[in-house]
Length: 290
Length: 322
Image 1 (tube, rainbow over the protein chains, first blue to last red):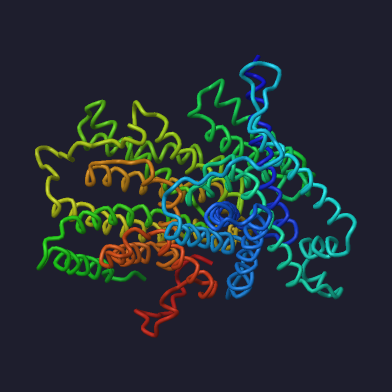
Image 2: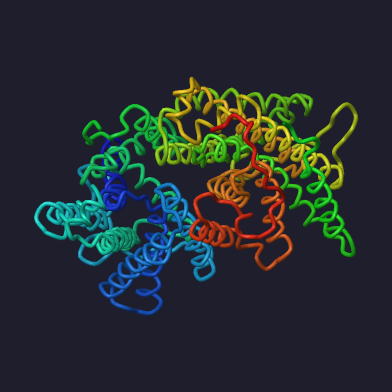
């Protein structure tokens, strides 16, 4: 019973991390049609910068977090301005591979500055480090409340953005048909830039919120970023909030596979699920049939 | 109308001779020659990848999976199960082909971005298996491999590995180039060029794609096996995402042709070997090269479009590919 509860709690927590990353992928894909494979590296960059600013430079958590999120957003915007926009012959696949190249560059540069160390911060103030849940051994890290709260805030923000604001409608219409949107007077490049900024900021936010939970290295962003992508594809790449059920399913599956099959099979289960969903339900769990 | 003799195998062999003399010449840099032998294995796998990327135009990010499968199967077969090394190597190639056939038939149902993501998942699964199946692969302790021994002839010196690996790579590239010009190969390129038109001409897109996928996997399997026997030590990270992307970079630099992939690997893998300061920054170098090429080059990625010298431009009307 303890094992079961611990597994469900850990799965939910990891799942919400994947969900939040996945929301970034979905946001960008819905409003630009693109895939940015550097999202995981943006997360890593924000997490390490947050660590350096708060513990080496002694900045308060809030301003260090703001710096990290703003940097991730800025790098994401640069990807759009410097690379994606200037491609001689853009297409979705080539842009995806370019962003993978950017991921390698960010990793390489971060490696020069931060080396191969593990970086982790203490839990944010306001919560206990761990909470006991009913039984002796079932525990939940206090930082998890920040992650869950962050996920809910982000989800509400994205929902309101897309359903209630003019900017959100314009972003969505550029994603649906950029040529048509331009004809109707929407500045498509600006909207794409905004989407990149938001997706980058979201990756940065996840990096900041999870820095007490993950032991981040310069190579550590890739796998977690890919899992966010899996969450987004499993939930529905083209849906607004499908990454949330996708991420939770992924987190739970991963934990259950780890406990009941063997820790060796966590990642294998995750990526097998991805292949199965791609083959049998490519629109995702939540998405409408195309 | 066929060309009498292909010019490039001679160029490749000459270039490799010069490189060997340069690397071993005044200074004894056996470490660098060893690196360059490994690069030959990567070249072979990249040539296979070029059949898929340049032929059937699919973005295959999973070549590292078959590369690793071939390497580990050869190592385990010759070591743990004490098969003759040649049997282990051949069975690794066949196994890669069979598995690619099974996977390819299913995977070819998705296309474009989703194919790339699915093959990427394949690599992650493969690296994980290599790390986790410790009793077979040694996990993160690595796995040492026996020498390649064919009927008493042992691959026991760097020069022998160098000749075997790069010789195989050149021959295999020649075979791949012939294949892409053959009837079946033209069908593969037709499907890559315009699937609807190819199907209208009665070409089965699924069969062609699967065939290209299987061929590329056998190349990767052979390359992996040769890597196992020449480096004689395997570590799971050598077959991960970075390795797969490295091959994609070589294929793109080689203008997505098989011959180009061979030359691009030979030249680009020399860069970190010669500039030793870059040694630890392979990722950074790869990233910069990849981004620069894809952003700056036009759609028909041909390096030759950047230089003025073109080997031969001759209109050919008699070849069947649309």
